[in-house]
Image (cartoon, rainbow, N blue to C red):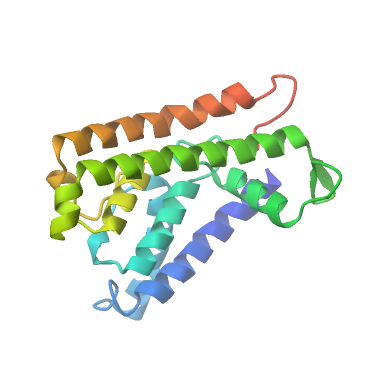
Length: 215
């Protein structure tokens, strides 16, 4: 609970700060400073949970688009209806990667030990989710080859579309109505896997004798 209560505002305000910095002279250029701040805050929240937009996502730069993809993939807190792999799963994976206790497959946080089972579960969920998402992008690129070749779609548009579907966010950079039938089927399958697959992995990897609600 302590970790979630710290990570939620950290992600919201960090995401808002980055969005403001990347978009203040581009997608937010017609807004006042106050409106830019509120819009940046709105983007930080909607990309991880809601899926609403007040500014067309296609107006954002490539750098902003890549950051938005990260926010969508991360998602919200465990136990919520938000999509993505969840903020605690990402945090534990990164914490273990950069602060590994060599010799012991554990990590320490707030003077408490995170067991190896929880760490392995987090790493597995992130790894499998990345693989599923990569396959979706690959098949989308095949299905939308003509649009990509003609310049109607850009590569980042396809990655954004697949990530939004996988994280069940619902945002798009404007290409959804233009997708081929095969592309739409791939997006529907990605949405289904993103909503049920991560949850299924969490249940399968969980130990009923342990409290793994952090993932």
